[in-house]
Amino acid sequence: MAKQKKQPRPKAQTPKGFRDYMGAEVEERNAMLGQIAEVYRLYGFDPLETSAVETVEALGKFLPDVDRPNEGVFAWEEDGDWLALRYDLTAPLARVAAQYRNDLPSPYRRFAMGPVWRNEKPGPGRFRQFYQCDADTVGSASPAADAEICAMLADTLEAVGIERGDYIVRVNNRKVLNGVLECMGLEGEGTRDAVLRTIDKFDKVGEAGVRELLGKGRKDASGAFIEGVGLSAAQADPVVAFLTSKAASAEETFANLRVAVGESAVGAEGIAELEQIAGLLEAQGYGPDRIEVDPSVVRGLGYYTGPVFEAELTFEITDDKGRKQQFGSVAGGGRYDDLVKRFTGQAVPATGVSIGVDRLLAALRAKGRVGGGTDGPVIVTVMDRDRMAEYQAMVGQLRAAGIRAECYLGNPKNFGNQLKYADKRRSPLAVIQGGVEAERGVVQLKDLVLGAKLAEGLTREEWAEQPAQVEVPLERLVEEVRKMLDRTL
Image 1 (cartoon, rainbow, N blue to C red):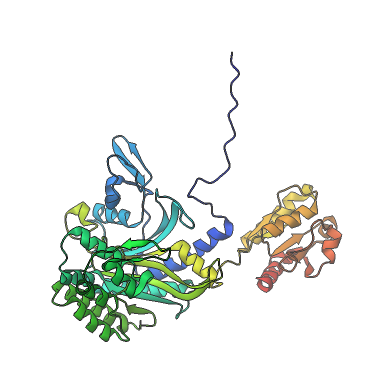
Image 2: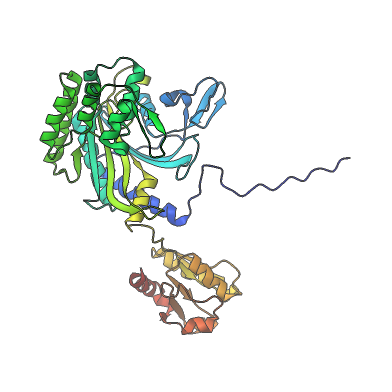
């Protein structure tokens, strides 16, 4: 009988394109999401938590083709139906709005936070699972709904720690762009798409670069030649006029946009909506230092149907090579009036915003708002394993008083190991009670914030000689621990 081949041990590694989040990272994210949720609730939005799995059909624009049924999504077949992990939080909202349309209030205002999954090639800082944080209003065509989203976005950034002056929410309207394209008289869907792709590069290549790309083409930074759209200078003029129409005041910007859209009715409609949004925001005290009309904002060209907005952080950071650069965009959204219609056949207006959770967290770390690590629990050390019940009683008192605490559960023989553990746990203080202290009815409280870098292997006697250690009666344990925490945290 052949000897059975030994099964190799599984590799302890995260799948490609995924990552693990440890204690402090999770707590920082949860704290930030909690702050965001408070702003959303303040605006009257309700939380919604949808299934992580949707039918591929419900995902709509991400519907896989016949030969590659899982392209773009993590999908599998079950009983003849294709299911997939949700790709974003908007498609599930559209499904919910259609499925429960007779039960939900209209307009329906909801916010959602959670992971999404994309079956795409991973890269630096680009993962296949990441968090999104969305807020949407479904069922209102009023520009007031768009203005409210912009105001809420500004308030959210300030609530999490981005100071006024370090961000700007920029607003545009897809209808204005459609009016510009209408003025150009472009023929063929391919040419229009090429123009749209070029417009999307404005923030990278500037006015001159856009002119070149709309014309014969240009060389990029590497020296490679990029083929242009092939438009004449006269045909390119409306696009450039649109992209560069931002002026010192909103009134001047609107005047420039009217020139750019010419006689286009849809373009005029878009400008009127922008004017109404600007007026509503001004009435609420949101000036151009927080929210401004900016025609260069172009998002999701095939997705949005009206106003679009983007939150950009304007402070500088230093990259890996020591170069200074602006942090950039952390949130974006707009009006998408056609998404729910896929389910109901009826037009259902909607507008919303999505915050890049990881990007915003990175910005807060860059500003020093988070990243210092979270404080661990108070550690009750164990000097005598036979007295574990007494140590657990101390922990119970601390927890009952709302103080995060734990009892050391490792091998108590080496006291130095308990100190190492407390250091790894970022514990603010330790409670120490040996037999002598127990007989006298006291405990030692050690401030670990001051002693975080103590040498390894200290004996209990050496530990006691260090500063910031006090002896207190056991009956005052909770009171004295709270005093020390108030001093050290």
